Amino acid sequence: MLRPYAKEHLPDTVFFQFQFSAAAEKLIEFCMEAEKSPLYERAVLLLFDLFELRRDAFDRFHNEDTYLSQMNNTADYKAVILEHVIGKKVLDIGPGGGVLLDLLEERMPEVTPIGIDISSNVVEALRQRKQREGRQWEVLQGDALNLEDFVEAGTVGTVIFSSILHELYSYVPLNGKKFNHDTVSAALRSAFDVLSVGGVIIIRDGIMTEPTALLRKVRLLEEDGMAWLERYAKDFAGRQLQYQRLGEEEVLMPVNDAMEFLYTYTWGEEAYIHEVQEQFGYFTPTEFASFIEQTLGKQAKIEVFRHYLQEGYTEALRDRVRFMDESGQEVALPDSTCFIVIRKE
Image 1 (cartoon, one colour):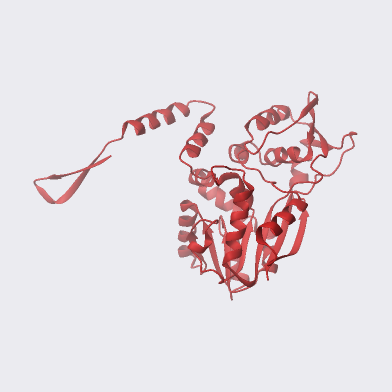
Image 2 (image 1 turned 180 degrees about the vertical axis):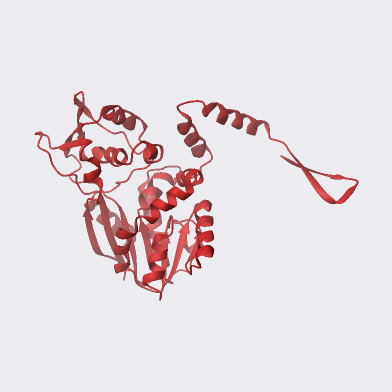
């Protein structure tokens, strides 16, 4: 609470007295006590859920430089996206550190790249970097589900969702529900509405394996591997994960449950508190193609649809797990990632 007051000997100056409300005092007390607990990070996430703040606001607020640096190290796969970019105006939804905006500006100088992010921290960091480096791209704070509020309909050549749809699916509630396919549908319709005829939506995101009933044995080679799995299955927010213990360090799991666990296991303890809150795969290839057709209708044509195992997972997990079929034969990890191009006809 702010209370303004004046002093007679300083008539041109207004002073303010700051006082916490009773609720704020309790919130501060809660934070101070939570910081003493091993559950501190979970307590912080509870507060962010309570105030309906996005995960990236927490992540980037605490570690902005590291986060943006990691995002900027993803230039190789993002360069592939440029092969399918068309039109003069290009929207990058959830631009992170701005690596794709940089690539667009440097390799396609004829286009106008615009980054759109709901996080004020990200937008401010990008604006500061733009000014510091003399960049020409633009950045706007906006909602991916309502792009027409920020961009004129029918004026955009390309809308890019690079590893962002699964975050919208996981974190953005629609009709009071997170982990909601309707959120993905709303984002795609919003993007489609701002496209010009002939424009494209480019998607790079997680994919699930089919058939979904496929089972895999996972042998955990690290001492704390089983404890990791047990904790992850308890904490994972996306759905109820299933696993059957076959031994002290081995389980039988549905393939997509196994992969959701392994994605987070790969990144380690530092990323755990964030990764456990999101679901990377939310459609199989068949489901995704059908969903796009149902959501966008006959005017939408899927021109590219491929899926693959993202580079790095096999190497990162080589000495940490054994991934096997039901007979115990070691098999390759399934595809983790899809790349889709949709054209508006």
